[in-house]
Image 1 (cartoon, rainbow, N blue to C red):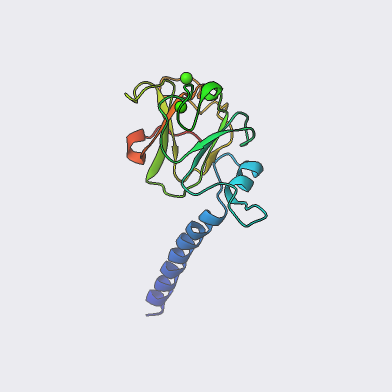
Image 2: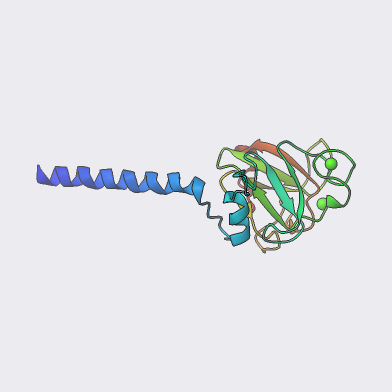
Length: 170
Ligand SMILES: [Ca+2]
Ligand SMILES: [Ca+2]
């Protein structure tokens, strides 16, 4: 009987251990490549108490570590180089870091090498629980054609994570 109680207690502790980090993850995201400034933008608030990054928005930056704001979107943009939508003109083929203000692992932002509403060609994805990609220049951050995703993102679309076939930026 003691043994059974001990096992039950151990199981209870295991369940707690599994729940606590998950709850903490929303307050203090830890991306696979940590960046203090991206963390600050993801978590921080301005002097009025408003979040620095708005929930459900995807952000792109010219430089690594979420520096040099390019634009943001809560939808999609089939051409980062035209004069419409969230990303325009010289935004195309310039992003070096990304941030996604959600913790929904079932959601992803699919980023493409090319443009157009056929949403075809080489792509990769930011998973909803990745929080940010501090440097697209990392060797692992490639499109599905093997090219680096740095300075090459030309369009993006919001998709279910399953549409990414396991192709994740980190
Ligand atoms: Ca556009
Ligand atoms: Ca491109």
